[in-house]
Image (cartoon, rainbow, N blue to C red; front, side, top):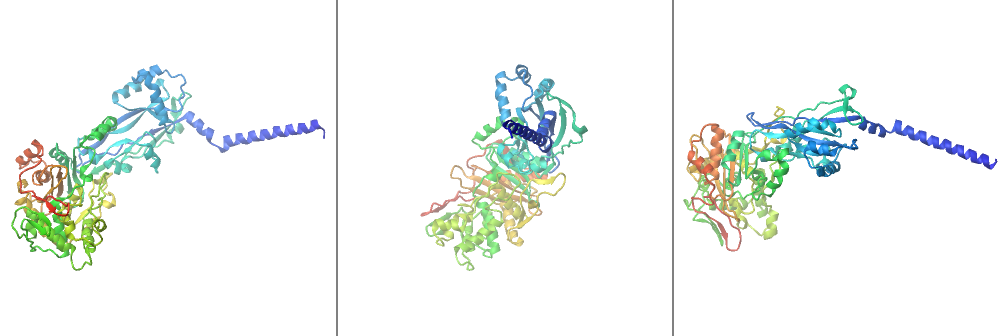
Length: 630
């Protein structure tokens, strides 16, 4: 074969091979791959999200609490088609400085998702009307409408929670792939816990657009469109009237109130002060208010009702009495001597003056420290236990069944579990089995390492009201009009204390209010069972505490109130609690105790107040100290 023929064949083969490669490439791009089809669709089609209305919230009586109002974002479609955008005219329409256009566009591009980014967030109604009128000239921009939250009452901000833009981290963790960048979701409270029910289902609208991005018509006559489905309404257990009243009573104070319906575990009111107006965390207001509230030294964002942890003080003596009765080391007729307190070697747990040989009922009515130091010894050092660890673990087991030492599992966030130390903790401090009740005596009167949250204290009142059981405290009553709330809120929890043991404790609690330490707070016509508590605070004045339920028979409300740095339990926490009980049971009628109302709402809580002598625990070789109740 001649050289020129060889070169001709090679050239022909190269042409054929190049043609085959081109044909295969074209076949792949046009038939196999949908890359260009997708690009064509992006150019010729636009999908607009139809955002659903977020579910409304009402209180237990049908009173509207949370509803929706339209909010508007100006978004830019990327990449921009307009190459010669009149930025001066655009900035004039938005009433922004021309030099701000570039940074705003860059931010929108940096945070873009699915071909669009937010250029300007949270336009008000006036801005929306003005911009919408001239926006047709700028086809790369459009306004998206979403729902902001509005509040019929300025109450319960910690409970309701708030809605805000999804973060990049939350977007990455979204396994459901429901959210796009720039969208909103519940960030705290009920808004967060019931996000899936409240958010609804988004709709999609498909449109054909021209080469400059203007909408021309619906794709496929709208057959591919889906309608948005509104979120489910949520009926919550809060009583709006009671909640508002509680926030009034706690105005100017630091502390919390938790009120529970014992029969169901539904939370009737949850107050934490200092607090804030829920409207301050509406989408349109959040950016300006969040930094201020975070830096507030009063910590208004902290929900003290579930996150503050306190020694329960003399309130805990109720639990001690019930454990002693169940273990058989106490009876209604059990007496222990109290000559100014409990004395064991160098240990002294002082007590205030009262008759020297109280029985069980009178020990609760007078809040005798010595009685419960002796009861603690009898509970832990029973013959059936081989060592102190066994006795302590048995005692601690009761506490965990009462819901202490771990979170209860409410349907809002921030909840803390309090603290119930383990035997291992004391082994590390004192040596394995080298300690006895004497070394941990402060636990017997609700001090030392023992910590409870206000919601755990309110739940204790509900347990006693129910004579031995509780339902996990919660806020949901109905979702989408149905009572099928999460299962964990309908399961009964038993404490392990037999119902018949509660009679003596309930009678004693009734006597505390009728003629004992809380007698000044009693309400005519309502038999209230309560227990005062005064808890030592190493950082200032003592904390005032009170738990109660009412009526004595067939209870409708259980409550716990904590007023920080306010002195004795009878001074502030007791009157606030009984006024709340009266308000709930008698509803709209005027209080029968205007003197109490004037004291609570007309003055600030005092650092100290009148009452019986204040007492402490002291030990010559130990740093354990504890305040006792009045």
